[in-house]
Amino acid sequence: MLDGAEHLHDIEAYQQAGGYAQLKAARSIEPGTLIDDIKASGIRGRGGAGFPTGLKLSFIPKVDKPKYVVCNADESEPCTFKDREIIERLPHLLIEGCMIAAHAIGAQYAFIYIRGEYLEPFEILRDAAEQARAAGLIGVDGTPSLVIHRGAGAYICGEETALLSSLNGYRGQPTVKPPFPAVSGLYELPTLVNNVETLASLPRILEIGAATFAAAGVQGPGPASGTGTRVMSLSGHVNKPGNYELTIGTPLRELIMEHGGGVPGGRAIKAVIPGGSSTPVLTAIVAEDILMDYKSMADAGTMFGSGSVIVIDDRTCMAQLALRVAEFYKHESCGKCTPCREGTKWVVDLLARIVGGTGKPGDVDLLYEVNGRIMGKCLCPLGEAMAMPVRSYIEKFRSDFDRYLEPGFVPPDDSPMKIVAKLAVEHYDHAKPGVNWMGKLTRADLGQTGVPAALAGSTTDSGTLS
Image (tube, rainbow, N blue to C red; front, side, top):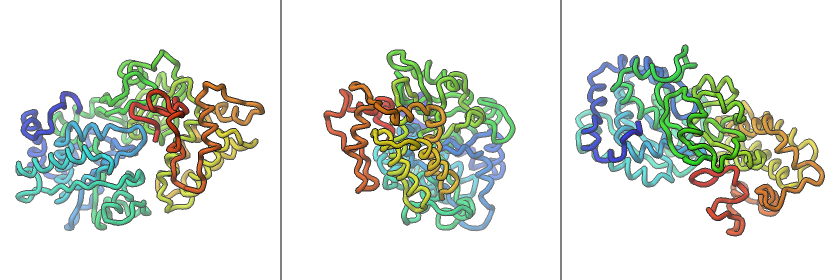
């Protein structure tokens, strides 16, 4: 997908490289046949849940009423940046994929809901859409129209019902399912919601054929299979962070050591987050041999998720990382449901108390229990997106939490833990819910790179976990 895609913003260059040929071909195919081809490819959603794409297309009812395609480009999962690169380098590929999906379900409108902070990608997409319109490919002579909509920066709008609420003009908050968007989505009409990479994969499936696409990756029955390639966002403690498009089923070790160049200074890997900050962590031993596919990740008790791989070296304190992750989800909770609104605050307060050196005996067990009580009780996955990783950090790295409760434990003066402990006690402002306490760091607290020294164990190529 990303190979040789440096100068394809211009529609003429894109068409010379074969662009829009698959859209023209798709429009001559009966929609049901097109959906069958996508099913046969075995492609699963690339946004997080991994739901079979062809099956989702088939859920759109064949009724005589307007239908919509909505592309979820609200990429906000910490350390996930693949969709941005696809948009910046291949805007026409995404537009072509949206139009193929629109033909498959009989939609006359497609929407791309893009993260509000992605101003440059938004402008690139807008220009590409104008070119496609001028070329008569979209929005003319009965062809579906495309609307590009900027969000306002809320992470929660990555959840499909919250996204649709925002697109409808309401507050971006999740709604109860059922009804599902396929039946009652945008404007209470049938709506297909898919991720950027998923839709951008459709032209490739038509170009090489469903059987060829399915032959790449992991073969298996039903949803256990994972076919084609996937763009992996690699960050954390690696020498060469970035996006790497690899065949599903590639060893995780290959991504980190060969493509990512290994860990700086040759340090040991302590853990790996395999699918974005919301997924349970893998220990170094498990990460050594695991394959990057849906079934292997599920068997290891985690998820393929958004395709964001975060490498954590042996200097990192998992209790600090848990606090950083929990603070992000607390800040991004929409507050609609009590388990998430109150649960995320409880978790952050407990972690701040533990890491701040004022923890009490039993706090780690209480922290684990509170996260467990959030699981399965929220309106949307956001609460679990915090609870699952934090519980996994405790399960696999319990000593990183317990040592803060040991009598006389004092982090060494040169330890990142010292700074976090000080900040947790002195700077965390409980009077202002939703304010990120790390925003109160002074220049003296920062390392030479401008990255908080306290978070040396959770940095990425573009900053910190949040």
